[in-house]
Image (cartoon, rainbow, N blue to C red; front, side, top):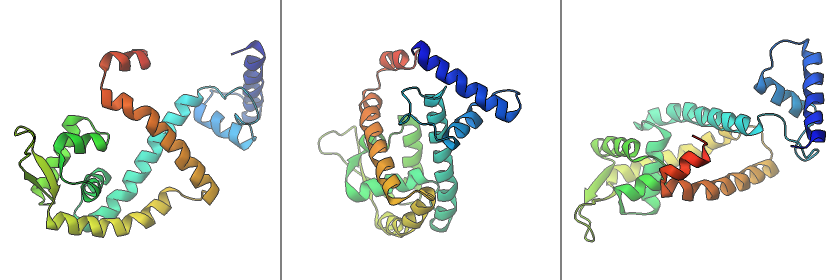
Length: 205
C-alpha cells in the first residue's frame, strides 16, 4: 500500500468515526458504511480495510442462510441437509461413482463425506455395487427410492434458490455467478491436491 492509499483509508476511517460519534470500530459496520457511501474498488485503487476478511465472513453467512432455508425445504422429503441432496444430485448426473470421487466432487473432507454416505445408504437412497477396476473401492449409485427423492427435491430447489439470491438483479446474478465460478476454478485444484504444506504456506500457519 502506498502512502497515498494509506492516507485515503485513514480519511475514510475518520469520516466514519465522526459520523458514528467515535467509539470502537466495527469492521462489518465500517464495510457497510463504505458501500453506502458508494466507495468501492471500482472508484478507488484502495480496498477498504479487512476486505478479504469481510468477504470470507459474508461467504460464511450465505452458507448459513442457504442451510437455514434448505433444512425447512428438505424436512418434507426426509433429507438431512443441502449436502445430502447435492450427493444425490451428483449421482443423478454421473453414476456410478466411487465413494471418494463422489465426496471430492462435493468439496468435502473424507470423514464428513463418509458420514453423508452412511446416512444416505441407511435411508435407502443409494446402493453399493462392486467396482470391476478396484475391489477395494466400491461404487455407489442411486436406488429407485433415491431417484424419486432427488426428483422431488429438484422441484423445490428452484424457489429456494430464488430466496437465496434475494433481490439481486439479473445482471448482478450473472456477475455473481461468473465471480463464483472463477473462485471455484482457483480453489478446486488446491482442495483436490490436499497438500498440507502448501496449505500451511497459503494460510500463513
